[in-house]
Length: 202
Image (cartoon, rainbow, N blue to C red; front, side, top):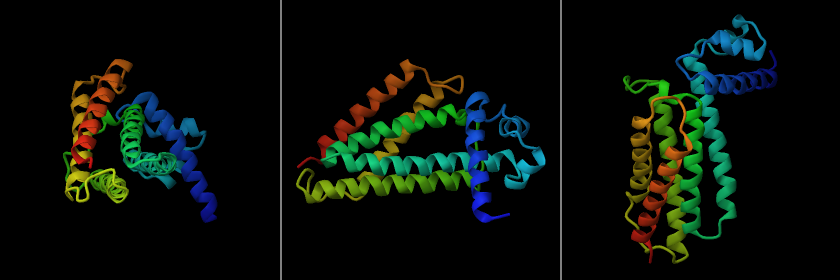
């Protein structure tokens, strides 16, 4: 099969799978459900993605790549480093909600430290830290932030954000986040980024 056509078909399957995962959650979704959504035979589906886990990984990776693109465009619109940090936290929260809606709460790969998912999440965290680092460096250069923000601060901020999300995950019973919980998490993240910015301001 033509490589371009193959890639297009993979993307179509991933987009369909995202809808199904969002509808049923990871644990209740079957490859049959996704094949029905795609209107294609299961054998054809398995040709592209041998297991449901493979397909779920692809869906999460797709979300992550879309977030990175979206974030790049958003940050270009912000004038100051402070605005960029706040925009990043806000957009990251929206992305987290999208992942919750995909049913990630019913998917737990973290019992296996060799899991592909662990490596995937770690890789994404590294990209997050690099983004925060570049924003802080911009703030250092233009005089918004202190001239020598400690090197571990970008990672610290990302870990704080992750910790707030994990706290919320533990309180959820289903695979969705209602408006009250979303507002609570948003308020905590805003307070966190405000305190962080205050700590590094010139």
